[in-house]
Length: 249
Image (cartoon, rainbow, N blue to C red):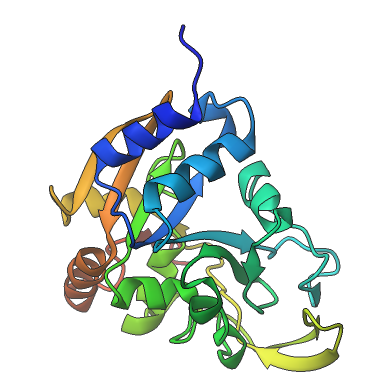
C-alpha cells in the first residue's frame, strides 16, 4: 500500500472540489486518513486552500472537567487528535467560547473567529459555524462520516429547533489575554433526542454533496449555503427530521 503524502492529499482534496481561496470547515478522523502525522493533514488542507483560503476546525470542549470552567489558552479539545494538534500549532487562532470554540488559520482566521464571544449559545450568529454557512464556505467530513457535523447545530439554532438548547449556565472563562470573567450561556440540551445528521443525504445532492476518497479516508464535501437552504426548508416542514425524538413517557 502506497504511503499517504501531503502532495497526494492535496491532489485528492482538489479532486473532491475544495476551493482555493475559500472557507473550509473540517471534521476529521486521523486514523482513517492513513496520514503519518496530523501535520501532514493540516499542511495539505492549507495547501489545497492556498494563501487566500481559511481553514476552520472545531475545538469543542463540552467534556471539560469541570464543565463550567474554560481557559481558551489551555483547555484541550475533546474531539480528537487533529483538532487538538491544530489548536497547538503555531499560527492558529481560537474563538472564545466555553464549549464550542473554533480554531482557524489562513487569510480570514482573525475575522471569522473574533466575534464568537458575543454569542450566548454554542453556534449563534457570530460563531464561525454560522459565518461559514452564510459566506459561501464548504464543510469537509474527512473519514468520520456525516454524523459529527456541528454546522447542523447552527442551522438548528437558526430554525429554532425545539430540542436543541438546554438551560442557562454560568461559565468562568479565561480569554487569550489571561482575563477571567463570568458569563451566562445557553448550552445545547439534546437530552434523549438522537441526532441523525446522515439524513442530509436525502435532501442534498451533487454537486452540493460530493463523496470520494482523501488519502485512505472516505470523505464528504458539502456546500455550506446549500446545506443551510435544504435543511432549513426541511425543518420548517418537519422540525424533527434530522433527529429521533425521545420516546414518549
